[in-house]
Image (cartoon, rainbow, N blue to C red; front, top):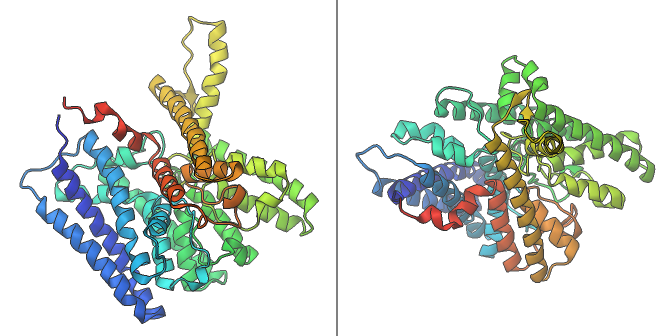
Amino acid sequence: MNINFRVIIHVLGLLLGFNALFMALCIPASLYFNIDDVVSMGFSTTATGGLGMMLWALTRSQEKPNIRKREGFLIVTLGWVVMALSGTLPYIMSGSVVSFTDAFFETMSGYTTTGASIIKDLDVIPRDILLWRSMTQWIGGMGIIVLAVAILPVLGIGGMQLFVAESPGLKPDKLAPKIRDTAKRLWLVYVGLTVAELLLLKVAGMSWYDALNHALTTMATGGFSTYNSSAAEFSPAIQYIIIVFMFLAGTSFTLTYFGLIGQVKKLFQNEEFRYYAGVVALVTVISTIIVASVMDDGLEKAFRDSLFQVISLITTTGFVSADYTGWTPFLTIVFFMLLFIGGSAGSTAGGVKVVRHIILFKNSFLELKRQLHPSAIIPVRLNKRAIDQSITYNVVAFIMMYILIFAIGSIIMTTLGVDFDTALGAVATSLGNVGPGIGHVGPTDNFAWLSSGAKWFLSILMLIGRLELFTVLILFTPYFWRKH
């Protein structure tokens, strides 16, 4: 079975067109804040859109193309790389980021919703560029591929393989019989929550500009801010609003959809959601008690900062309201462990995902029972239903591969001149798409000081983590490229 590169290039052209459309949405900000920036944003939009239209037109076919599994994996991985490459143009053309390596790192961090940044001072960056920076996270949050899936059937291109390859989690949930309708409903929820947060932030005292930027990056669980101090810049009311929407963004959008249409019971019947909320509550209580005892800011601030940072890290958003690495070594270790949990499957959060941890722990305990009853068939149950054994194998393989990549990645970072603590933090936060880590890439630092080699390596880890390992790693296996 040969790979149909024609259809791959065709879809990549379409994705570049989408990218140009979102760039064009930033041009009004250029006109309003600094008309001198219109040329750089306009050129970036035109160049990206022109290349996309050319690729799309040159690969048009009279026959209805079919995206098979192989094409799906290639389109998703190459799509993210192409989007990141074209997304560097506004940074470079405006002179905001001079180095191509830095521009690519910042853009890949945006699209993968990691939130790691090389920009030292946000105050000197043009506002339209900061808006584009936030926009990259919002595009990557739900996934430009999922948006494309909603449109591709109209063009005669089936999109199921794209949706399977791109959607976070174990298995994408269908909200409708047609995959296109599922993608549309997910995007409607995503847009609706973004607008709701935008309005609430404005009511709470933010400017329209700051409210828009933070609504975009909160729902994407991305964490880019327009201030160097991140969420610490804002009032308690604004921080509580961001907390609520970070939590929602880390919840399965399928469950959120059911909640919005009145089927709230499904939320609390879902085992993953209960564990997700339970971990947030437990760690917040522990953190609040410790922070209140070592800091002198009062119980409410200790609770707010603890809740904010717990949700920010477990959902891989990466906003910062306080320097959690200064809250005692014990809490630093606890928050480092949160980098490996992740939000719910089917959310915009990165990381391993809560449901995988549930399945792994259940299977591990059941293995003890199987030792006593070797002839018994004891399946792992999730939401009171037995899950297929292949899913359990997939989860175990995923977590083992995740740990292996983390370990090897940390070793590689130390060979690139990074100290051990920082290597652990940089790899964990890049692979988990979180943003702040520990060491010299903690909540009060950034990634600007790293070498070019380290930045490229971490950019690769961001992509691997965003596409949940296998989508990218499978491309490097010989059997993927064999003809059948």
